[in-house]
Length: 141
Ligand code: CMP
Image (cartoon, rainbow, N blue to C red; front, side, top):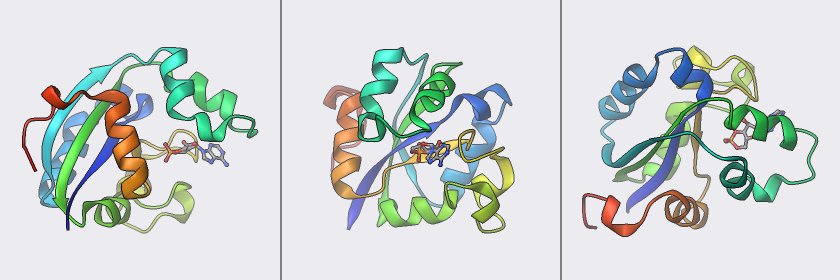
């Protein structure tokens, strides 16, 4: 099905001037950018986004990292994009990510892992609505 996913280019990748390189990978994969914004996440925004991880040992450092610099949030659209996008970015831990994936090429660690992607249609809907209002999404399904 034609799906949308919430993508983030995280502060490590933005800080390394990789926005254009990563957007090129998305477009070359056939994904359409239907919304985009560069945001300095507040602690409240980061905590709300990652609320499901509250209490995990990696939660506090994750919040620190995600508020350490600008993040680019994107809504990408394409056929079966939720699994296709996850394949393109690779596993969360870059040492486990397949060669040629975005995380294998650009992530430094499991925390500083360059990009985020929604893991299911339900989380995509929640995550897109967390950062974007309907008027900011430029293609109607
Ligand atoms: P993301 O896909 O954005 O979703 C949750 C994030 O938490 C994940 O990417 C990583 O950045 C981070 N994360 C998940 N597991 C760990 C871990 N074991 N150690 C450090 N960070 C983690």
